[in-house]
Image 1 (tube, rainbow, N blue to C red):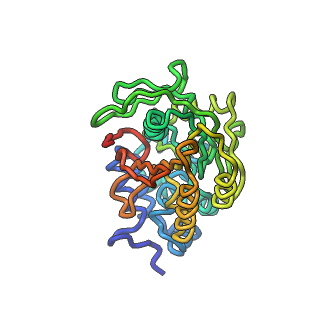
Image 2: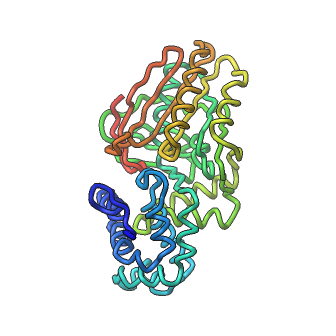
Image 3: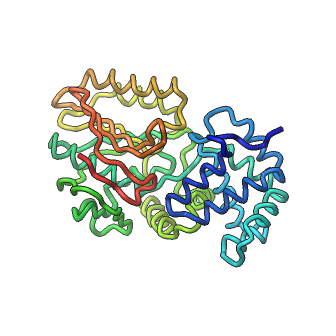
Length: 346
């Protein structure tokens, strides 16, 4: 059996390694390339990847495998893998081989779980869109997030931002987000959040040690600034626990959109890197829910949809805003997938 998944003539792990290198993570690229070469030593993992039922790129199989290796390294098992992540040697192939031989079952089981990046730097793009909404409507926002994971981005108003020289959020916050900014700065406006609520099939608890380990495992090991930012966001979430409901996203969203909306508030549905994990039917249902709710929107009770997602071709990450009444959609920005830079186009 061919244990590799072809993606344009390359395995999915090699495809993702090229993405990682492009995004400034040579260490993760080397991990995935060596894993691709040694994959046959992990028959459970190889079979999982070969038989993945959906699009392996959309499912981020490469990121799942890299995070499994990072999780093992943080536990110190096997020793050669832990030593590699601690930069004590550079024999990637030997470390991957040892991991597949010793921890094949763990790696496969880890990869079956959902990705859990919950990258708070993406909150900069979402916040810039919210500032624009605040200027346009003059109203505070009622936030509804799908795919909230640990809910860290529900705390976005508690973070401190520098958006192309425009300061926003809480200047005293321990979470400071300063993406490299391209293009004009957004117009200044308060981050005026009346309420924030999210949903996830398997929400993570910021108080839980296992949650912390899973989130840190998904941070790329050669990007320590992301790990420090995550640590600060988790600490803040322990003091201000975000509200994340355990439910199916579409059922939950339909219920929330049917609830009465306070006049003078802007209801905002937002998400970041979530739609790729929904099948085509679920995506259609999601969009239909929004448009049906949008048809009921008024100037006193507007609705907005903020999306931070890959394009269908996975060529770029776009920040878009759709607002009702009117169903007007605008491309606000393109962005680094983890929010390292934002090119503002609004």
